[in-house]
Structures are given as structure tokens and as C-alpha cells.
Image 1 (spheres, rainbow, N blue to C red):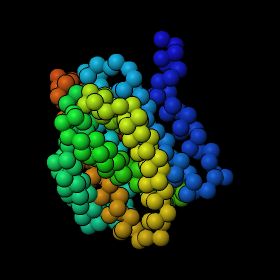
Image 2: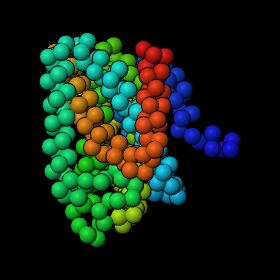
Image 3: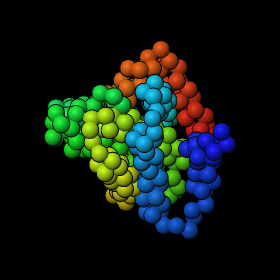
Length: 275
């Protein structure tokens, strides 16, 4: 029992909060890449659990429900609130709808290529059935992670300090994403090299996307930054409804709502403790 506590990802949260306040001597662009990479690394942790450990689908679905609640809270109280404070209703509304439209269109195209169930732990398309499904799943997983990573970089534009709440929320939600997707990839016949290659690559790209979010947008107007932030929020919410929440409801439907509420409340508390 002690060893489980020692290696539980939940126990990394206090260390992340302390470490985030002690990086004053590190260039902000390097911090942006670091925090994006940290959030992305949670995908690798989840992939290890889903591929190497025999975790029941019910547990995976429950963790997915918790992660969904965490992200819903983060995009409500972190992303949308920040976007509104920078650009008002116009930029926030246009960006939010645009983000949902962009994700939905891209997700629809990838679904036709075999990535429809990329977050499902038990119903992914077999790699023997469609040779293109593996690449589609990889691209789809990358599509899911881009908005979250850019948000981390954008959060550093004001004062050069990362939003630890956003990092923790994305970190916690990425664990079940990697967990469920890698379990499904394994059942679909994809080997360890492919599975871990996908998630390590996405983790590295997460750092790059966060860096882009900081460096590219630091000289843009508040309206553009607000629109970009709300685009990410819209894409994340569309991703949740299209991919994560269906996985949670499919197996843990009796308790999925309650678990999602607990995740939402956990993220809300973090937001208020670390404003």
C-alpha cells in the first residue's frame, strides 16, 4: 500500500505547485516548453498503465469520467474566464464556436480513416482490418492534445508565470486519455513500439505546442489571444463530448455522472486555492 502511494501521480500535484513557483531564473520560453512537456508526459504514464498493466475497463472508464470533469472545470473557470477578461464577449464567442467547428470537422475526417474510437479501451478498429487506422489514431491523438498544450503557453503571456491549475488539470486528464487509448491500441493489434512511439512523440510535441503558444502570440493583441484561448476551449469541450465522455459512459454509466462531478469539483478547488 505504501508503494502505491509513493508512485501515485496524484502525489505529484504538490510538487508541481511548489516547483512552478521556483523557476524565476529560467527563461520563460524554456518554462513554456517544460510545462507543456510535463502535461504531455502524463500521456506516457497513462499509456504504460494501459499497455503493461491489466486494468479493468470499468476502472479505465471511471478514470476517464474523472478526467472529463477536471477538464470541463478547467475550461470553464480558467480558459473561458481568461478569454473573456482579455477580449470580451465577441472574441470569446467567435473563438469558442470556431474551436468546436474546427475540431468537429477534423475529427469527422479522421473518424472516416479509422480513428473514431481512438480513446476507447476496448473497441478500436483492428490494425489488420485497416492498415491506415494506426496512422489515423496517431494523428487523432495529436489533434486532441494540441489545444490543451497551446493553452499552457498562452497562460504564460501575462507575467511569464504558468497557470499551475491548467497544467495540473491537463496532466490529470491526460493520464486516462493515454490509459484508455493505449489499452484499445493493444487490443487492436498495435505493438509496443508503435504505441509508446505515438505517446512519446505526442508528449514531445506537447512541449513544442506550448512553446508556440507563448512565443508566437506574445506580440498579438488581447482580442487575438482571447480568441485563440477560447478556440482551444471550444476544441477541448468538443473533444470531451465526442471521445472521452462516451468512453466513460459506455462502461461506468451508473456512476459516470457522479465521478465526473468529483473531477469537476477537484479542479474547481485547485482553481480557488491557486488563483
